[in-house]
Length: 131
Image 1 (cartoon, one colour):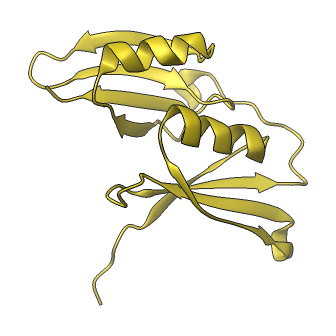
Image 2 (image 1 turned 180 degrees about the vertical axis):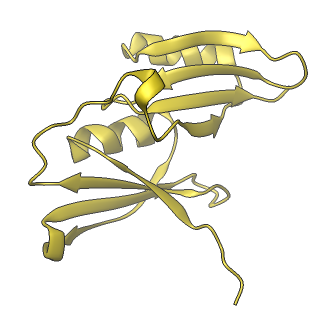
């Protein structure tokens, strides 16, 4: 049997706010959304509209009371990565929406231009422009 990586899951404190962020600001499409009664949770699956990239699972646990990210150096999960067509336009649009930009765009010595932002729950997201 061949193993295939199919999705990554991140927790959210507000499913509506997270779905809006990832669909409206980062261009993902909501594929499905459902309740998981066994662990009192709700999950939503999102993917790019062309179905090319990995699927993102948003998970909201109703019993979870604390939604804080540890300091950067203490995090276990590092970041999600999104390829963008135009970094300047993307950053400008995110700035208008008051999205936290943790690292302004910079060009790697060899390779793309990257920047880092945070989602509504502080999950770190790398933006990558390959030109």
